[in-house]
Length: 161
Image (cartoon, rainbow, N blue to C red; front, side, top):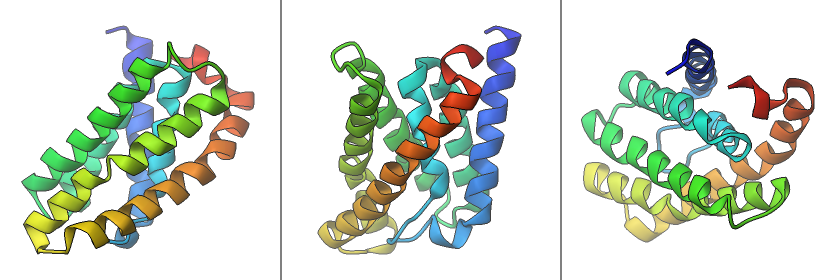
């Protein structure tokens, strides 16, 4: 791994953790608005961002989640699965906005894993929990699209890593 990629991944992870920390009370319940999830859109610009995003999810869940190790398995697993689906699909979906919309839909759908986790750990009702966490994820990811596009115009994500 090149030094530039390691440094960029570390910065992405740190940003993910910092933003998660700012809204921690709203990021680990059955109604989630984890603003840092908008960083998931980075893989649309370059698949190498998966390292920093997954590291950020891991660290956030390790230090801020009250669910313990189960959140490392389900939370990190959901991120890896959704990011991998988005990365794989990129060769079939043309256009930045289309890929970001697809990414939003993938993350929204795969929140069933988080609902399953909350069902196992806290006995929350699965379907209702899936609805709540999926709606929260959809809102954050949808709002994140114009934010990430605007940041890309200034930072050129494709070239940073």
